[in-house]
Image (cartoon, rainbow, N blue to C red):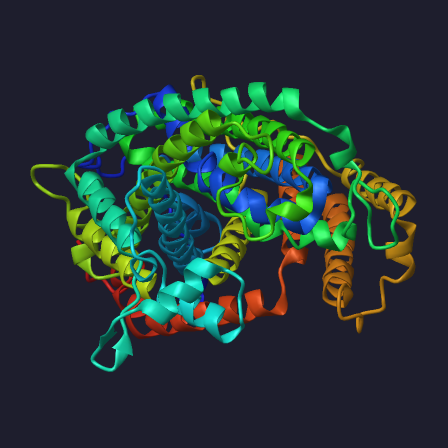
Length: 561
């Protein structure tokens, strides 16, 4: 039992890595912008707006604040443990081996499944772009089998999906339906990441500059087409409201909103390829997060101001949609955005595909996965085998999954990882301040956290009194599940208030912990069910392989020199 919670100690005398250290602080910033401003803005933003209305901007702010505090926790860990592995490595140092495996398994889900969604989004934009050029890709070659089947069986109005099902050729008694563009981009990105970090860095930086320039153009042009009435649409009672679907409607968009932020975790896996990671990595993470949050707030205001939020139902290309003929009718902007979206989403694929092999690399190096995953290619100095396996892990499920399932599944794993990172900092002892390293400011939460928490609750009660009056009505078919989650959240925070007084906890990671826990209240029971199944599979692998082959276990038994 002790092994399950045995912690790994990282020191300055650890063997140097064989990975190439070529990344500076602005390279980290660009990788951050590549990962955060991508599929979240060019794809899932539309679904988030439809669910939450103009008020979804509040959720972007909440996510930005939560990620801001979490970024400081990541930065603190990165300054202490400048090795590859991300939250997995940090959990190993703070919680112990079992929790490290759990978070590593969650990160595998985050990167692999996240890239499946991103590949689907890339395919949507790419095929739409080809259509504008007069080149048609058959519908059954540009969507997944589950999506086409679900649309046909449910009588969907999506003509492309219905057509894919009805026109698909029969092969071996089954309809042949596959998203070929999604599979092809996955193969190309895998090859690029396999070649090396330097080549990936240069390619990424060029695309990010172009992407940011176009987003600024969208904000600048879109500002002239805003109709302020769109910011106060009618709610269910026919009253103008900034949050027409209620706050539960806003929280229902948490998967789509938070999906935008999951990529910032990928930056911490680049520690062993960063020059002076104890200084450059924390700075790069924080700068990229601040810029990205401001961009999302601005984009949300522009989109909800230009177009009625109800029109975003099922829209997978929201940034080009606002310039479509039925809206502002700017075909030249629609064309520019479509081209840029293809490039923008490509950068997200690149960063995620870089992150996953390095998680496997770190876990293999600790003995929790087979040694093959930690082998470094002699020529390219990359985790070659793990990169190829990542490409397979992303490519194969593209044939058998759909976007909505992947979106929800990915977000819950990422928020859970963020919860553990903030919690891990609370368990770490304070360190001596050294020049040239990042140091999270220690602020004693003893007299701050509890008053702040109850003040926020009181303010929310004043803003949404009806929600609190019905807080224990858990049987409501629309909001009951969310109300139950909020009740659990409030109870957890009462415990945190007690611990803040008795343990003198650090305020910043404590705020990160409570804000990330709040984001979990937007997850449904289906999210938790699939999340539990995934972790059950992971625990079986750990107890049957990782536990026996752990380097810490071998060291304890005297098997290592």
